[in-house]
Amino acid sequence: MQISENVSLKPYNTFGIDVIARRMGTFTNVEDLSALASPGILILGGGSNILFTGNIDGLVLRNEVRGIEVIREDAEHVYVRAGAGESWHGFVQHALNREWAGVENLSLIPGSVGAAPMQNIGAYGVEIKDVFHELSAYHLGEKKVYTFSLNDCEFGYRESVFKHRHKGQFVILDVTFRLNRKPRFHIEYGDIRAELERMQVQKLSIQAISQAVMHIRRSKLPDPAEMGNAGSFFKNPTVTEEKLAELKVNYPGIVGYPRPVGIKLAAGWLIEQCGWKGFRRGDAGCHARQALVLVNYGHASGQEIYDLSEEILQSVRAKFGVELEREVNIIP
Image (cartoon, rainbow, N blue to C red; front, side, top):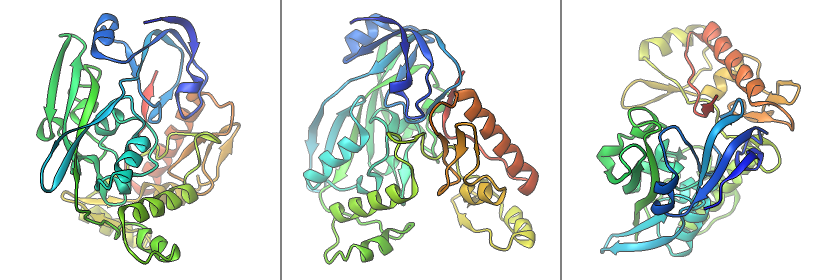
């Protein structure tokens, strides 16, 4: 376990923000983590849902717990445990290669396996909670490993217990997924059906759905390797039916999607209506194809991107009376 000093974190966050960690190391197992861990350290996974706004005057540890293994099977499901340091998209490809269904709609989402349940990642009608079985997590204060069930995680829309009540207390070590032997196709959400038709798919499969999802994502979202970003910067807000009816008086083009509680609005549409799509100030901007994505064109600071996000929040509040919430974790 080697600890380096004054390390640039630019290679370790998809925004490409160049800040310095005073001390930095990695861990590949719980023993290494236990030897180094203390409350207040920063754990990094894939760095795909984080915005650094300043240097880190402390210890940063990169989670590199690896391994994918089948731990149980039955007639309908395969239970697969993956290390938190595994690439999420790599895990999806691993499942597809073995005909394990359930995560094909989540193809090409950047980040690590360990980050997936923290924010209950989701796309095209599927969320982590739909395939989640359990996870192991290390408590930094107690230096003890706990097992979290589906109910323990308290999953919600881009939410889990690890983002609120247990924020900063646990380090996820591995996640076990319950994948399906027989696929249950989800192609009604977004443009998947149209993309499958464009691809001239004759026989529906999880591989075809994965390819369709990847085509759509690449057409809409910038590649972090080419333009710094963290995907969707804001959550889609939820309003009441009464608020939606009120908005439709002045904005008849607004669309709402019913949720178990309230109506979901498209944050990207709200931001675009406020004139931010394609906006650029210096190297901080709002993507030209997807207003929901803030980007670093090269040398923007995290503070510049954060300031832009604050202006966007205020403009949506002023125009629509709707509060946006950042999906990306802000590290001061």
